[in-house]
Length: 155
Length: 143
Image (cartoon, rainbow over all chains, first blue to last red; front, side):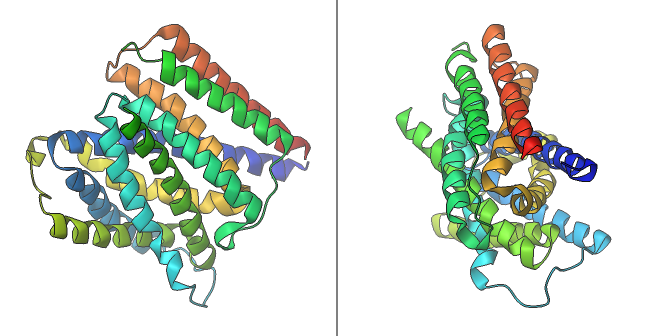
């Protein structure tokens, strides 16, 4: 593997790992809102402040558009799925699952569906066949997560 | 408990679904524009549901700590990152690495907010996750 693809690999890994940290913060912030206000409020606020923040980022960064051609309309519906997610995680955070349980169980649903999507090349994304190493990595990360769910919390 | 566990699993499926759709939008536009549409469409959807069901401002939302309102800007960067990554390393690799970061930071946050937990389990869990990341990286580096 060349030097540049090796450093790209490290960039992708770091970006994804950092994004995971951001997600934990979101679950904590939105879950805290849900503890004071309604579940709707806990999802409505981050979407409102997020829309304003994204608009500011677009104005400041002016990212180049990849295509002039308009994509199909369904690709704009990712936000509906995301909105329901915030409501669900805000509810489970305040249950006995707590933060680590909410995160750990979500990973099972996330991984099964992601592997399925990759092998089929769903939603216009590239088809990929996971390698044996990918499944080994998956097993280790799930094992670590199960340890955290069942033994990580003292209750 | 089973009910909340099912909701948590479903939330995971929806996270992946949302990331794939946003990733497809980013292929035609940009990661940040995809994140913008994700948030504004979600906002319209939640506002609609909240108007139908009512109770958006129920409870004492004004009593929430100020920092709890920062989920939005954090989410914008998170969604943009996911949309950018999924086209480059695939849905499974993106999800797996985000999960690794999420789990490890989740343990750190649990410790910070003082959630009860056992040190040996947290150490073993984090060690297994780091080992998984190392294996995932080795697999790609040789391939």
